[in-house]
Amino acid sequence: MLDTIIAERYATSLFELAQEVSSLDKIKADMELLIELVSGNKDLRLLLISPVIRPDKKVGVLDALLSEKVDVLTQKFYHLLAHKRREKHLVGIAKAFIEKYKEFNKIITLEIRTVSKLSESMKKQVVELLEKRRDITVELVEVIDPSIIGGFVVSTGNLRYDSSLTNSIKKLKKEFEENLYIREF
Image 1 (tube, one colour):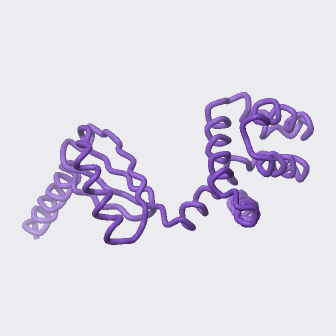
Image 2 (image 1 turned 90 degrees about the vertical axis):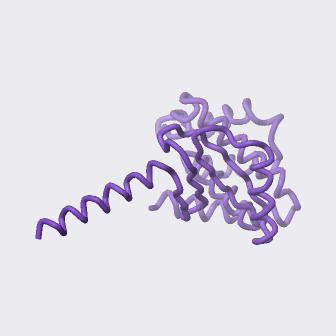
Image 3 (image 1 turned 180 degrees about the vertical axis):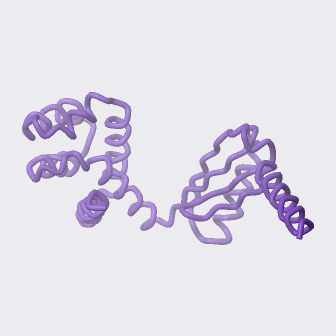
């Protein structure tokens, strides 16, 4: 809970500052780079969460990896985090920043789970339909999931529509069990 509060507060501050200096897109790209870098490197993750390693050493490593790739504001931001001993929250803050960016720009991430890959025309139709009806931008994420047997599952945020064959079978099984239970009485 505290991690979420910390991430939200720092992400909000960074977002507002990025807005003031008209660098939202650049800082968002930097946050995506940070997430990718830290998530893909176990040693870097361990370095950031270690209470034994001094903050200036952590900043030195981050500078060596990022100084040529990120905006000055991003550099100053992770320097501040290290100074405040909040560097272990870097990924959480970056994710919270990206969520704020998406909300600000009316971007939703829509995940579609299917057994096989959707055609490009089908993807385009789904995206266009939602964008026109909701006045939003849709980021489509396609997931191939053989366990659903057939049909599809669409989810965004905390909303989910399950039209998979697996779900239909579960519902049918539940109905049969309820009918058998009723007949026994």
